[in-house]
Amino acid sequence: MKNLLFGLMATVLFGNLSFGQSLAEKLKDLEETSIKLEQDIDKFPFESIKSDNNDYDKNGLELYNAIKEIDNIIKEQKEKKADYVKVVEPLIDNLQSKLPFRDLKLNENEQLLFDSFIKNIDINTALVKAKLYEDFISKNYKKQDEVKNMLIILSEIKYISYDAAKRSRSLSGWESCVDRCMDKTFSNYNAVDWFLFIAGNPGRGVLQVFASCGWNCW
Image 1 (cartoon, helix red, strand yellow):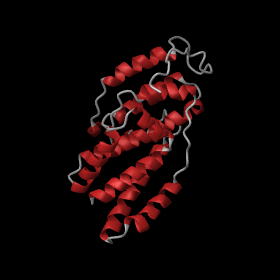
Image 2 (spheres, helix red, strand yellow; image 1 turned 180 degrees about the vertical axis):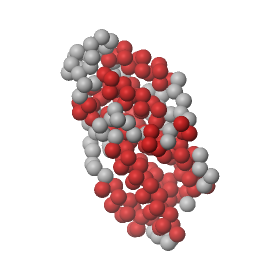
Image 3 (cartoon, rainbow, N blue to C red; image 1 turned 30 degrees about the vertical axis):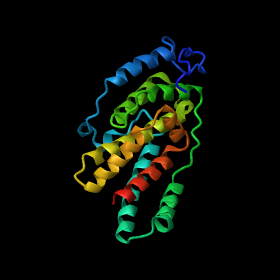
C-alpha cells in the first residue's frame, strides 16, 4: 500500500480534479503542511468539529454518540457486576447494529488520498489533519460522492480523535485509563493496520476497542 505511485495526473483520475498540479504534487504539498500541525483541544469546541465541507460528516457524529452510549452501558453494568460476555457484549452488539454497515472499499482517488493521509498519522493530531484533508477535498473535487468513503473515514477519525483528546484531559481515573488503553492500541498501528481497521468498518472497530478498554479499566 505504501508503494502506490502518486504520479498519476489529475486528468487520469476521472477528470474530477482541477487542472494544474497533479494530484501527486498537491498531496506532497499537503503532507509537508500536515507534518507541522499541532492540536490544541481547547481551540476546538465540539461545534467546530463539524465541517460544512464534508457531506458525510454525520457518520462521525453517530460514532461519537455511540461511544458516549457505551460509556453509560459500561458504568451501569459494572455497578451491577454483570457478566461481560453474557450481558455486556450483546448490548454492545446491539448498539453496533444500529450503526450503518459500511464496507469501505476505496476507489483509486480515495486510495491515493488515504495513503497520503495515513503517513505519520498520530491520534493526537488526527483531528486537525482530518480537517485539513476535508478542506483539500472540498477545494479539489467537484463531486464529493466520488470520494465518499474517504470523507466518511475523515469524519469518523475527527470524532475519535476529539474524544481521545478530551479523555486525556480528564481528571477521572477511569477516563485516563481508557485513554491510555486506546492510545496504546492505536499508536502501535502501522499503515497496513490502519487500512484494515478502517476498511473493515471503523465505527464498529473503534466501538469494540473502546468497550474492551472501558470494561478492563473499571
